[in-house]
Image 1 (cartoon, rainbow, N blue to C red):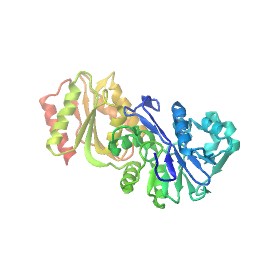
Image 2: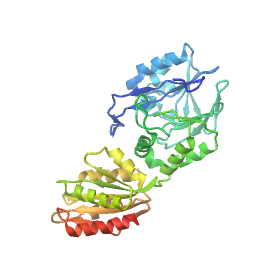
Image 3: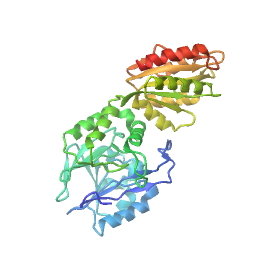
Image 4: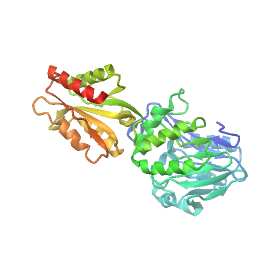
Length: 384
């Protein structure tokens, strides 16, 4: 795939991997993106997961058409991008590797200690001329690893953005909306590191960027302001829109009835609502939706004196991704000693800028007429 006359795509799609980073369900696959810039001195930008080395090397051969690359740019050494460095090093023994000093210090950890002698460590704002193209490097530590850097190509005004602006989903899938899978990818993979992403966005704002080439997902070349605005929203932990996510766990269906009843009341009041079953829906999607809206309702039965295990896992993930600046309400269920609301609130301690709703609903086994009145009161509070 030609991105321009000089910039070629050499990445691969992976439909065999079921769990990204061993935990995230990627039902539409994933792409590992790699690029080649053809010039007097040709450069390769990043490799792919070792699972796809052979296919990647074939793509490289086709793109290079016999050229010998002078440079290999390492944006991010994590194995899904650095997993084929050995193949590249062996294939092109005269090629020099270019990376951050931190990445160079990590080479031995991934079995690449011998590449240090062939490595040029670059720092903030360093440049590298390929001929007609000039690469300028910007450090992006903790987006989302400490060694990350991004590369700006000055002639074609292209930002090679490492894991920023990536998304789940293979590139040979049918066209799909970028937003949901990009949000899911950002919140779950990068979400904890909003501050470093804000720093990177400020650097990007000073550049004339006309194209973004991430390490996962499609190349972005139109309406870039839209993508930059989404990243600014996510990395500053602001809600994308007003609305309510109702996340529930249920033992025998009664807490599910409660969650759906509240959703019905809210919709009647014109509130945007999504409901997620934490035992059945994909956890990473549920987590990303909690960051989409300004309000989250947590509904859980009491379980072993605590809360429903999937709810505990959900809240743990929210905290790990720096959940903040949201309104939270609780629905608890318990047949003899309801304690879930207290325990859920305790688990959220340490989260910044959370506002807890005054109305909390306590169910004793099944939804009663008194509970319906509580739901009405909570719905009024949430729709105000």
